[in-house]
Length: 100
Image (cartoon, rainbow, N blue to C red):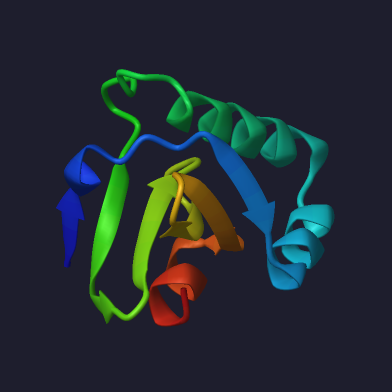
């Protein structure tokens, strides 16, 4: 289960995990463009409606958030101090839900 909205978190910068970078490089150019666009939308304040930025329940240390890229792809991330998003993974919906 997820919580929509994630408490008004505003993201200013990104850090990428090695795993995120590896998975990102395997995406098609079209999917990469979509991921880049969704991540850019997260830095907009107020956040655009329909972005589907959610906190995953069951992950409290650290809190894990996701954003839907398409109906079948998601990005998972942690929010670090100073409004920095640590991008953990990018992949299909089932993979991210099993192991964000």
